[in-house]
Length: 413
Ligand code: HAM
Image 1 (cartoon, rainbow, N blue to C red):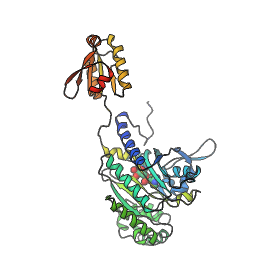
Image 2: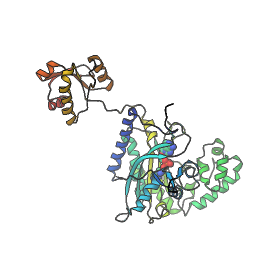
Image 3: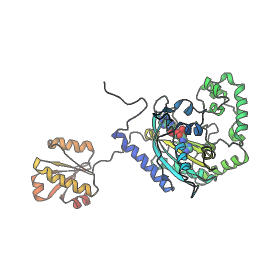
Image 4: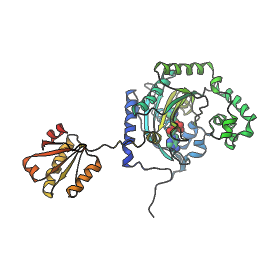
């Protein structure tokens, strides 16, 4: 029996890779306009890195990590997200030494042992961006505007931006206690997961999709009503900056992120088009993470988008690049001539295809059609001896006669 891929791990086939490249190029372009540089970090890290950053009581660390012991007895994990590894590198290479303000972006595969379904996979891809070293809410607003701009650039008016604030170590503990007391009174109505997490991670109950939990937490106290002055002012400034730039958003006071490192601003780009996998991109501020990982007390903020989810939103639109020209030949004698012409045109930057196997003219033209070539030309003895040929525009059959010199052809097509 033939071997298949691992469950939840996907191949990106040639018919889809054009869409992926379109997404990646749009992201690189908007990031670079905003002054971000690419960083490439390993896809495996010491397990401890993720436990310490994402948090022991999160779903990711509790049950979704691909962790193993390698041949040297080291505890290793395939990265479930990008921020932890990027911040590990930021600290390890002292990228802050010259300037604590670093703007970094990354893309690549991430791994989570989740139940696969549409939009949720075990190997998936993120494109992420992080700014370190800025306490000012301007950084929050720039990151959010950049994310919104990305979706505009690729032509999607879905998804929509939702923002929230999760407070800081000064105000969140008191809120947690208040929320815990609220949940304890309704413990019987909560699902088993929420009851279990009531003391370790009570905020997760606000995000639970079980109908009983949604009903039981409907009147729960909100973090936004319990922010300290610093966090409340910060959130107000972020909103003001978003208003100044006419960036559309809504406030979702029940948004809870699945990673523990967040402080203050958190956000998601949410769609109604992908069923329960509604977050297409998500992120937030993590002012304590860098010091928690052994680095200096430098704040950070960033996001990551799920490339598979963005690709699903783009739908079946065809991003494959069609050839400019298909060269057909009448006989074996012309194939050398045609091959040279192909070579010269490729050198000039055109996309050109030809027949490789001496097929009939009919089947060559079928291939030109299938490839979606813009023009085709048939080279026979006459064309070789006269040095001219008719180039046919495939869309409407219109023909133009052109000298068989690469520069001339390029000007005409
Ligand atoms: P996250 O919310 O865990 O955040 O993931 C970000 C995005 O990755 C999600 O919104 C979703 O689009 C995509 N994603 C997550 N899990 C899967 C999956 N199993 N299959 C397909 N797509 C998935 C983070 O990872 C943070 N590191 C984001 C961040 C960066 N925060 C600050 N900086």
